[in-house]
Each structure stands twice: as C-alpha cells, then as structure tokens.
Amino acid sequence: MRAIVLRFGLALLLTGAGVAQERPNIVLVMADDLGWGDVGFNGNKVIRTPHLDAMAANGLVFNRFYAAAPVCSPTRGSCLTGRHPTRYGILNANSGHLKPEEETLAEIVKAQGYATGHFGKWHLGTLTKTVVEANRGGPRGVVHFSPPQANGFDVCFATESKVPTHDPLIKPKVFQKGESLKNGWDAITDHSESEPYRTHYWDETGAMVVDKLLGDDSKLIVDRALPFIERSVKAKQPFFTVIWFHAPHLPVVASEAHRAPYKEHDVHERNYFGCVSALDEQVGRLRATLRDLKVEDNTMLWFCSDNGPEGNQKSPGSAGPFRGRKRSLYEGGVRVPGILEWPIKVTKGAVTEFPAVTSDYLPTVLTALGLPVSTQKPMDGMDLTSVIAGKLVHRAKPIGFHSRNILTWNTQQDKLVHDSKQDQTELYDLLADPSESKDLAKAMPDKVAEMKTALMAWKDSCAKSARGEDD
Image (cartoon, rainbow, N blue to C red; front, side, top):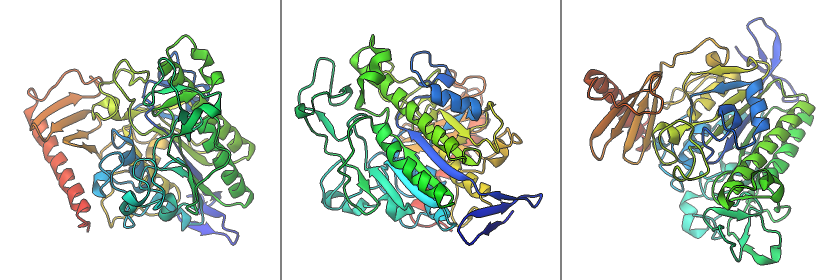
C-alpha cells in the first residue's frame, strides 16, 4: 500500500483494489487514573458513563488493554513512541522527559501533512523555563524542558502535571468537612474564597494561557480541541489530536450538576464519580462533533486510561476483579478500559481478548497510513490492524513491564512477575486466573525459566537503549 499526497495536502491511500481512500484522522483520548471497573461497559453500576458506553457499543472493546506502566508519565511516552519508557529514561511520574532522539508519532504524521494538536495533561517534560510551578517547572527543571511543540505538535493547550478537575487553576482557601487538598472538594461557588493552585496551562508559543479557565476541566480541554479539529476539516487536512484528560486524578472536583446523581455519597466519592461523568460528557461532545463534521467514519478514535485507580480498596476508583491498583504491576495497576471506534474499519459492538498495550498505538497508526515502522530502534509495540480486522486473536509478541524493582512478562496466556530486589518470581495463568490468585511458579519451573530468560533479555535490550546504544 502506498500514499498519494494531493496538492492541497489531503492524503489518499491506494487500497488493494486500487480505490483511493482518505487517510484516517487519529484521536488519542486518555483518562488519568481511571480504573478498569470505573465504566459502565465494564460493569460499573454506579458511575454514569453513557457516552463511553455508546462508544464501546459502536466500536471495538479490548477486554485486555494495558497501560505500558502503572503510573502516568511512562505510559504517556509509550503512546507517542511505540517504545517502553525505560528505553529513554521516563521511569516514573515527574521523571525524565521526551528526548530529541525519540521520534514521536506527532512528528511522523506531521511530516505526512497532518495537523497535530495536544490538549490536556502532558507530563513528559516541563513547559516553562522561567515560572516556578507544578512539580518541576521553571529554572529547577530546565534540563527536562520538553513541551509538546518540541515534539511535533502544532497547537497546544497543556499542563505539566495534575490540576483540580474543576476550576483547574484554583483551590479553596478554607476546606469544609471531608474536603482535602489531596483528595478533592465540592466545586468552589465563591471565587473570592479561593487561591492559586500553582499549575498553569501553556500554549504552543510557550505563553501562559490566562483566559476562559473556569468550570469543568474536561470541558475546557475539549473547548480547545474542537476548534482545532474544525479548522483541520475545513482546510481538508487530516488531523492527529491528543486529548489527555486530568480526570479522575486527585484532587477530584465536580460541579453541583455533575455530583448531583451521587449526592448520597461522601465528598470524595461524589466528586470522583462526578468528574468521571463530566469526562464522559465531553467524550460524547467530541463524538458528536466528529459526526457533525462528517469525519466520524474514517477517524480512529481511541480511549484508554494511563494506569489503574489511585488509592486502596476503600478509594472510589475500581480495578474491577483485578489484583492491585496504580503503582502496581499486577493486573489492576495496568489493565485499563480500552476502546477503538473507527466505523469504516471496526465491526460495531466487537470485543476482543487480544492483549494490547499503549505502545501499540504508533505501529498501528503507521500501518494504517501505509507507512513503514522504523527498524532502526527496538519497538515494543506491535501493529494491531489484523486484530482490528478480526483476523488475529493470539499475541505472539509478549508485553514487558518494568517499574522500580518489579518486572513482568505477559504472553497471551501467562504472566511472569519478577521482583529483582528480592529475587522472587511468580507465575499466573491469566486466562484461567485473571485475578492472579494462584501462583504456579513452583509447579511449572520450566515455564518460569523460559519466560524469565525472555524477560531478562528484554530488560537488557531496554538498558542498552537507555545508554544510547540502539543499533
């Protein structure tokens, strides 16, 4: 398959039958700390997510979709590079940055004539060299300055890290009973009783955004994303849009309207549930705009979360039936909601048990565009186009994970968990035991040895990349 680029920039593909077809638009939507069990299409009976449920019913649901890491920054890097984050030094939240040597998906598609826009949380480097803000911004984080516009994005509306999920730049001066700076609060009604949260939005020129920043944060993000999409469609230019919501990362804050359905719950729960519903509402608004612009059919619209839910079992977020939560490499920390809606290619209401991961985005998109996937550097993701077509059900390429001293190796059926500090290894059959309750390591030493050898080889390959020694 090869691409033809017309004079006005609209690219077409020649299909096997020789019929010209517009190249797809690509939208990557990501929630922050949303658990696998926090959505209706995965069985949640409390949180209202009608728009995500409709997206699932009209698209392909991945029952085994994985974030590349159990925390946010590393996962985000994998979406844009197709590589595991240990290869380029983003080992944890607020660590490392996207390096110039890494070729991002935005850079690749921009070179093919796509308009590129990033909206929401960035968390892959600092956004300002002068203003002390967020976790690393300002002079203290200059070495990690790597904003979206330095990584292939034409238009940006981005924060370095977390913000409250309503009125994102402020917090209450006085907290009411049950409210906390960490967990969240009911949306502020008297703004004279607020103070700065000390995280800001920045645009593609490096300027701080100062207007229209009150209200639901998910809506503020989509408010900026939709005009970008509309301009691209009007210009007949394919677009690549990243929409990375802050919800439901702490502190969770919801408007009175969004928390009203959950008024019988405590302050933490009603704001958590409310901000998820507010996010869902904006997914619906995005989908409606794509329909209205008549680009829905050939837009790859992806949705996932960056890791499992925050807190412990008493926290509002749900990992469903899975063991572990955010920061854990057990399934609950990395298995997240996953949907692809792409009407021209995806069978309505399809569901797959194929294990997919955020690192798969880049090779999948490039294949869909008829572009080669680079072999100059090791690629951890794989092309999912055969899965999307319903022609592939078994993953031959295992998924490796590495967070702190824990490494795991996921195959189609089995999962090896290795604690390098304690030198302890566990083995689980994910098909028979998805909750990881029965350790089979002692009963299956040969399989443990085989999988551990492959895992250690992958670890060594990642370490080689981190040293700048990719072939």
